[in-house]
Image (tube, rainbow, N blue to C red):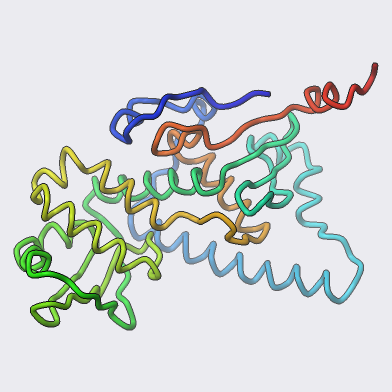
Length: 273
């Protein structure tokens, strides 16, 4: 079994030095903040539309899912996409995909966490963090130190993509947050940021602890175990992995995917013997 390079447990700062050999020949596509957000929205709408059409075809006829099968069987498509095309999910944790060499197994949470982390880091360094206003602000209980941190560190919060305001001496409200993060995680993400700013100060949190902070935010936003994904959503993760630096390792240094070749599968089943 081939796998991405083994790595000991490491902090995001240490993993930062590692380059993914599987994608060394591919240069990551650099998007500006506006293009990143627009691209995500287009992918999201297309995924929903395609998922609806696919479900309608399957429920109303015996017609096979030709789009997925034709992509898998097309040699040119597989050459352009080294991680191949999704076949399905296993145990709600892994994406199974087929490429020219055989079977690809992807830890979907670890892979998506790396994707979101690299996006956050690129946007933060360019000082172009795309934000999304919340239709209904998310309020939560806070102590006096957190309220004071919000009042004192507005510039740092805005740079991270958060608009947080006091509602009372014991209540805070998240009014906007980074567009790359899930709105359902607004409270958890805001609390993580406030704890970093409160414990280490804005200067240290945004410099020497930048990687740790962004990695924590990415973890909150990544797809979770047992989250059901459509084939277009799985393929979108595979395509993003191919364009993301260090995508063969998660933020903690563990591999995100393995390759099992057809020859290895044949040997397991003793074919040809």
